Picture 1 (cartoon, rainbow, N blue to C red):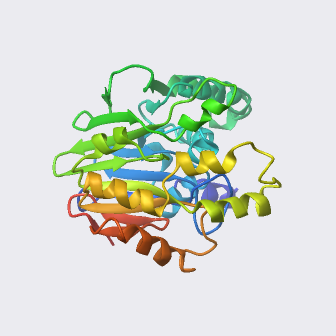
Picture 2 (cartoon, rainbow, N blue to C red):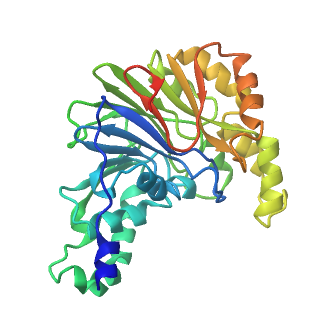
Length: 327
């Protein structure tokens, strides 16, 4: 009994002590699981709570390592509905429910987000019913979440109830434009810009070259962007995903068109001119952040972009006002 009680104690929660900061929870790109890099997720730590951008697999474990509890999440901005950006969403919903998080979680994302969240809430029903130890009056998960969908109309801003002082703008990027070759309705992928007093941040999401993203991010103080080594990613597809290059028509073409390689990222950053470029969503991802890939890709980016650059690793923390790594 004592052991059970000890295990059940909540984790200690850290609170901001020196202004708003960005924590890179997951810096890997693509659906494969790795130990060195979790999938895409970033946390902005504010006095009001946490604002997440994406929730890839491993992000909840990285939050735990950072001393951040799921009950502190107020809003999640989802760039698009690929597995490496949303795989941990169900886990986050369940853990917020188990902790009786106060206030509703606002999930913002492209069209399809509401259907996904509704389905996850329905799938949680048996878990809620089975968890009588947490109280028969446990709320339904659906009652703890609200969804706002963006990108289907010309409106380019969204207001967050938990963060009224933040200005949130978005733009459709080019990540999924090549999917028109498929016989499906073209999905939407978004980039987000966040403006606050003393700092601003652009999250490009997964994107290829995109005038819309460049216009959205112009003169932002901090830019969080992806980088993809297409040739290396294709090798990983064949080696680790039980697929051959011919199994998925146009995969390489779509990967090259819908992502930023080092050269394209350098050119986009030069146009946007951020005070700090943070390189994340690194694909195919490396087995170790220090295997040399960082230096090679950084050198390629520097051929076009001469500004300050940080190659991200999981749990890297950046002070948003100074644009410096925080300790």
